[in-house]
Amino acid sequence: EVQLQVSGGGLAQAGGSLRLSCAASGFPFDIFTIGWFRQAPGKEREGVSCISISDGDTYYVDPVKGRFTISSDNAKKIVYLQMNSLKPEDTAVYYCGRRLYGCSHYEVDFDSWGQGTLVTVSS
Image 1: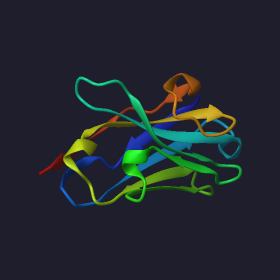
Image 2: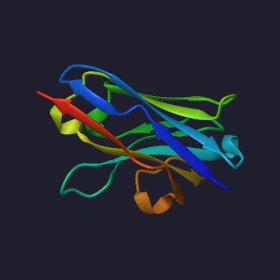
Image 3: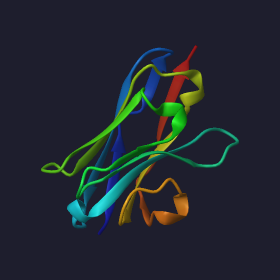
């Protein structure tokens, strides 16, 4: 069974940091891409970042470039999203998803999802 277990959300002040984790199981981790998406209240889900496990290729959406870092621990099958210099507009429910092939920021390209974790950034 494909499982993506998300953890690490919570409350942070503007300028603070949080780290999200996406623990994968039930599929060959090293041939997939893991992506992080977020959905703010009243908005559509948007791609934030992704990493191709096989070659380490990464992608970041412009608003998070220089602040967020995606990485993977292939031995543990965990993908992390380190979020620094958080802003109130980063407040959202964050999800991780998986797809075969390389990075994409389109939700439709991902076929399995973890449960969301709420990130709230106060000003």
